[in-house]
Image (cartoon, one colour):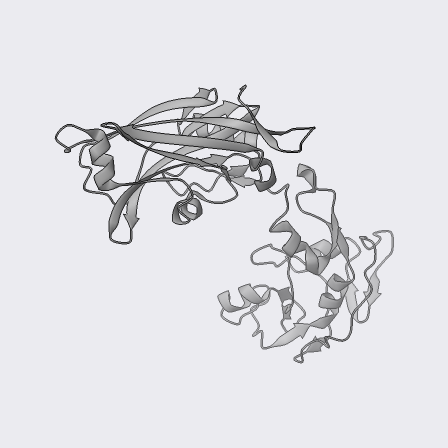
Length: 316
């Protein structure tokens, strides 16, 4: 649908020294017959947000904002995708910047798009994207490691999603004792075992166990991720233990937030890493089958009001 907007055409870049002072977020009043701002004619029923929405991808547009000779606009990403043809009137786009619309955007202050999830912040239009990329209220990505799941949401939604859609093992308690079996243990190439989710201390934790190549060596790795943000994750600690034949390995650390993908955690080696030959030694028998038992516990760190040091809270 065509919108009645005419922008002043210019193929020159914006003057970086010209900075408009931000004004509170507002819409043009629909009670007037029309509005005119430095040559831009705006339909009274059209909001500034609609004008800043790319007609192709529907995302908000940021400089450079392009336009055709008839005044139809689109973002720089989509300009390359439409082969230099206006998606509205099919005229050739050329290299025309819609400087007026860019200046209008510069003057706006608008709320974070995660306002409905609890974020109270308001930002200048051009600072909004930077904030939203790290906003504490942004949805979490699904932590399931068995596939590239694109589901995102808050923690309670993801817990239900993991249980209903991925059929993961759900446990209540802060201690665990898991047995991992693999029939061909020398064939290690990005194998992933079923995710286990633990509920304790009012929080949720994901236990991962994977096999992959570390350089030329085959290794197994177990690690824990916290279903929450990085700051909350620091309130908890966990230990992992694996052993057999009178030997054992122990790991202690802080769970990583699910803001970090399981690939990021794995590639940073932030967990219990077991060399394949050691894993087979722990498995015992004829070493033709992997049989690893991984035990562990999770605890919450508490600040001692007298000395300020952290002391473990073992109650779940």
